[in-house]
Image 1: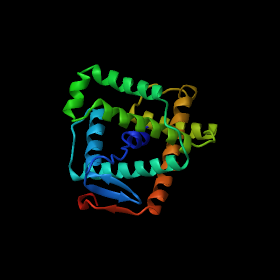
Image 2: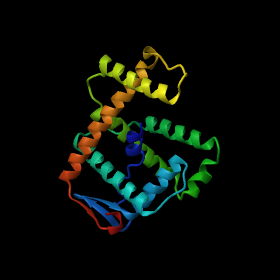
Image 3: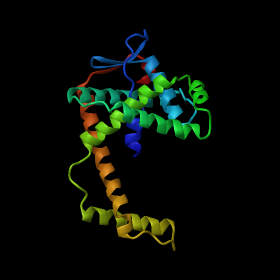
Image 4: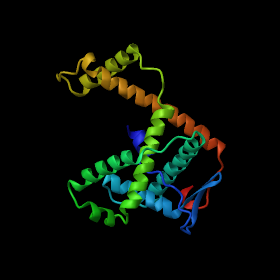
Length: 212
């Protein structure tokens, strides 16, 4: 799910031992210029894309980090547990296997100015965030058969218009996929509404004026 993946991509913990210029304050929490640049590099590494540092990319990264700070605050208030080390190990190995299939993993890290420790830190927070969003914002009520059928009919019309003559999947074949799509849509909507409310409750100041 795109929204979840965008939100879970990188959640950066504060590095108190590093003296760095503050870019943004969100209540009592801060985002530094180093964190912002590291977020750009890790995200580019995971997506296998060049690092882009223009204003649009930095502003988008800043928005993600603000949202991630809000989620982290909620996790701490609710005492949400971190995933076990073995779960993080599995996640890291999955990323390593995917990236190492086409190029040297260590060389790829060096090219983005990263280390395995930094990557693991980001992946641990990414996994934690994904699990928390699934737990906190996924609706308890299931998707009704009527909603599934309505979505199927709408999607069927689109398929027939785009691919006339092609045989579409039956409702039975598409049911589970549609159910997941609608559940993910509800999760995204609930998350967006919560983030909007949380942003309104926290004073956000851009000390780096280029991010406004």
